[in-house]
Image (cartoon, one colour):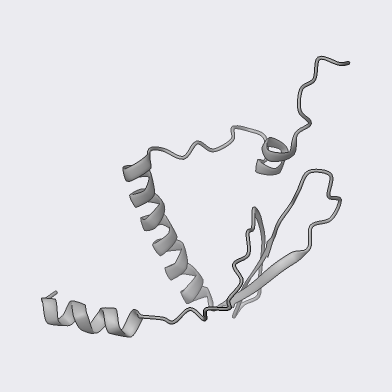
Length: 107
């Protein structure tokens, strides 16, 4: 791709983030789908919380979701190349790893 083409692509992909946009932290996502849509419900689960509330819902076409999946994979690879491998929990679920009770010697 020529430098001129790259500049055109960058202009097409530039987005504006409103200054008052509030960022949300999510450590869990529920994914559901129909034939024509993928629905991502992002939530934050905290220790002791019985039922996390959805903070944001993103709806994409299956094609957009697949492109997002590819972009996420590429960016995770770049991250790991720069900062090292991200270790995933073994056979337990992520929630079990994140929210297991702390071990205590007071038992």
